[in-house]
Image (cartoon, rainbow, N blue to C red; front, side, top):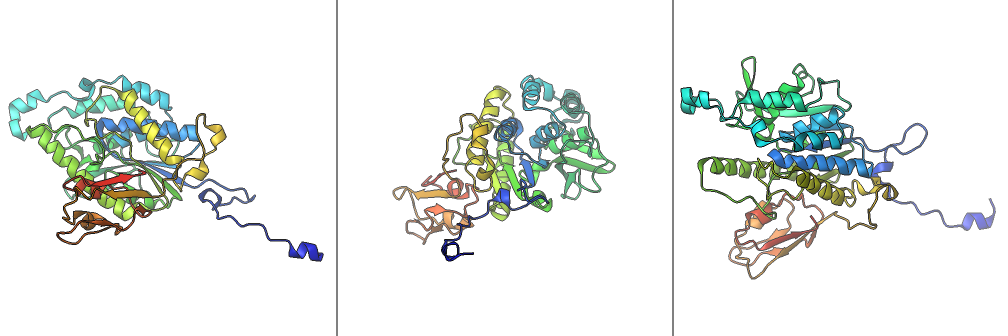
Length: 385
């Protein structure tokens, strides 16, 4: 080596991308092992189909699918090999009556002792028509869905070791059996219901699968989106109470498990009813639009995108590595709730004084919307979501 060669500056060593971390024996970068988590949310779950379309268009492959409630239905269809177009066509043809037929006879005979408002057998028959004819272990990609055992209150993840000896229809039915709406799935002396009761976005389970990347879809209603209009009736009160509990549980899940390798997609579907069958294509589009925004800009996924392979993708994209926080000082009353619910120390509030923002650009924010949802005067505004 001559002196000129010895004095040449060394090449710049760029930080390794997520997609470059794992190499195969030939030294070629391998894509990250990816788990897709599809959360619960009734007919808002049709947004999952749009997320799947965005993944396909962007060239992002998934290795495992985990579904909850409606996410288990869409996830089972995707894991079984249905295309996005096939799923949208099948579900767009559904009417509310396909799922919900009142248990008139049982109500007549048993009254309040009836197990459910609607007939679970009708819902089960529709699932047989919708789902691919496969069992656990036969899907194109591994698939899991959760349910809650009513006797113990514990969760079960169908498809995991020890929980595979159940038909796909029964597993999805139990994951979708909303409390009071459909009868619980009975299995021996145990009864199973909607997994979203305790885990509407099962990040904990997804992490036990040891992925490099998690793409999670959260459909729970957030205060920063437009919520459905509340009606002062028994059923709507019970359902709104269920949704509020779901929001709080999701909030805690995100606090504990949403980190740098979780790309969180939150489609703007809060204005829709859980049982809104009116415009499935529009709901699908909302999921696709939000998925494109997140996946092309999130630090864990944006380097996986091939812009030349996606028609209409503009570069550079706006990074979504942080959430911007602003407080309307005129509206703030200094109650301190923002500091109480924030897990990342973004706020400082002294009793009786206006709250201040410690992190205008909060890189640790879990996008749970807890601060905005709990602010009594709507003084908190979040951006770059």
